[in-house]
Length: 121
Length: 186
Image (cartoon, each protein chain N blue to C red):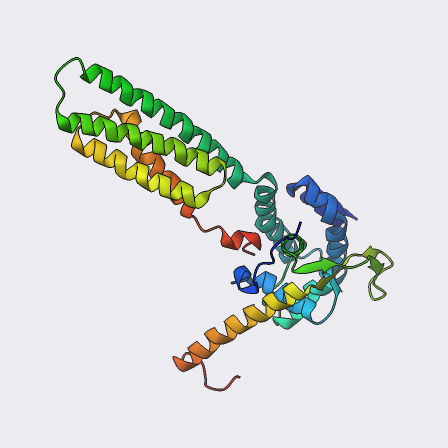
């Protein structure tokens, strides 16, 4: 059965934690803890995902086809336990881009309304 | 390690199928957090508990498909109440026919019958997941029921609840935004 792919705009707006996860995966495939650390570093500690929030969001992203699992393997930086890795799908990349454009349009509107400086800080 | 045992216990807050798929990974991540953080600090455990409280109920609700079950029950109740409404209107007609009936009264009872027939149709549409058709049927049923009640004060409390309050409640439920639920709210 051929399922009709939903356009990226259908998934917007993304919950903040979900967008942060997609941003982390845009840089390459990651396992759960690497995503958490990436999100925390990228947001300068303002967004801290716990395991429940992270895997709950990943489960929904997997079901929606925005993220895919890759093979399990050990992370040499941590321990010898095998971990599940996640990567963005082409749809996930399109949705992340569409959300970034949506947020960019909002920021530009805020600049025009003088709520933000005219040049990025 | 006591911290890990506590966390494994907390994982029972999540649905079993979620635990089966992600439990091991979550324990690994928790172990990483313990290694990089201060397990004895109260703030560490506040964040752990807050994460469970924030994420587990939504996953449980998703797992049991609470909304879908609720809508199915509501649809069956709608069909039953609609059928009772039709019977009540017919009984009202029979009782009224023993004496001369005014045109307004006849029109009110006929509108009432139509309102409940359309209400049964709305219940069937909800069961078949035809949201658009259900909304349309509910609006039509509501308008007919209100018109019937305004023309002649013949409806009892139960008939008014079934004919007016139920369609209003179902319309609110059917128009409730559900788009964001695909990717959650976290």
